[in-house]
Amino acid sequence: MGIPFFARYRMVMLAAAQFLRDEHVTAFPIDAASIIKRNGWGLKPYSEYAKSRHVDVNTVARELPSEDGFTVRKSGKYTIAYNDGVRTRERIRWTLLHEIGHIYLGHFKEFDETLLNRGGLDDRAMRVLENEADVFARNVLAPAPIVRELSRNVNTAYLLRTVFDLSGQATRMRIRYLSADLRFRFESLTQQFDTFINRVLYGKECTVCHYYFATPGAIYCPVCRNTDAISTYKGVTPDMIYDGFELDGNGYPKHECPRCGNEQLSGEHCKVCGVSLTNKCTNFQEDSWGNIEWECGEVADGNARFCTKCGSPTTYFSHKLLLPWDSVKRQPRDRPVSDLFADPFADPFEKVTSAATKEISDQDLPF
Image (cartoon, rainbow, N blue to C red; front, side, top):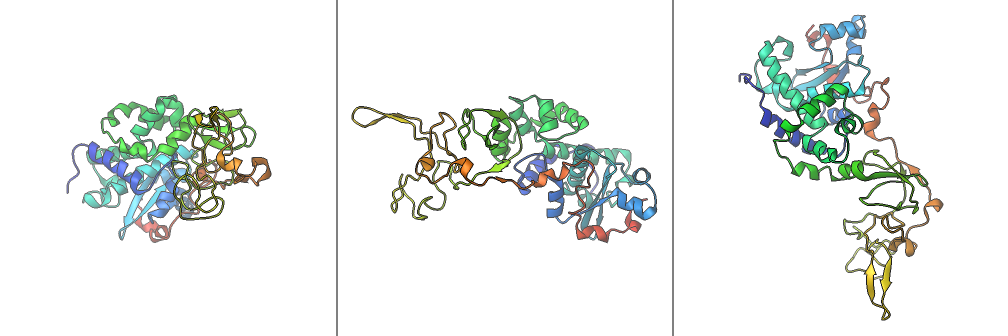
């Protein structure tokens, strides 16, 4: 099959959205290392080639098909090579998603001309494939509908640099083509990132207990009732973990009664121990006859001791199902996988290189 004369824009946009679903991506920045490992692709830094040839990385980068990275396919297996001499995690991440785009879009299988070395293509053909990989990369690293949703409350350039962790060049490209990419409506994609969007727009860190929460309109910390919280974005996991119960979207236990462990749940109260099953605000007012005239009724999370709207205790805290925050052990969250890129002077991929890498020898490289 011959390479088309123009990039297949719609096909690539659909592929990028499907890729995010296939890989179960729910937050940004993208963890490229885990994606490569999960798919069984090899990963090899330019420094390994440089070491075997007794030259520096810059010399190798000039000899290889691309200064940033390229992909080799052998016996149906892929190995992505990347320039680890580039000391910017944003540029490395873009390179990896660009190369993943070539793989996911079928460039190595669909076109006879592609072979193992894209450097052998003529300028027109290579430009088409490169454009498709770029469209794929920018819409996986920062999907247009997600960027649009967040840009309503956050400066777009700041958002792309801090939340999506794009380089300056990638940020400019994302902004330049945002309107064009939005012509392809993938509204359902935003549902996949509801938690992520809420944390970016409403994320706050309590200055007392250091719990990280994201509740629209929140005034009080749900763990310690503090009103001094800093608006910030830290990803989908809080820094401090406080014990609680797994609840559904309506504040009911998903599996069992939080007090007695009864698994046959129905109604507002446990039929075994009588405890209120929902975790919600206890603030209400009664008339002279004992009827409830008004109640806050705010549904709380499974570890919430207080209502984020009015600061009143929750039902679980009132029933002593949850202990005071300062009397329980607080556990810092383990370092998330996405932090593999946190140290710009470390090789973030040395532990995830698969066995497929070893199958690609120097003799297979297009020097």
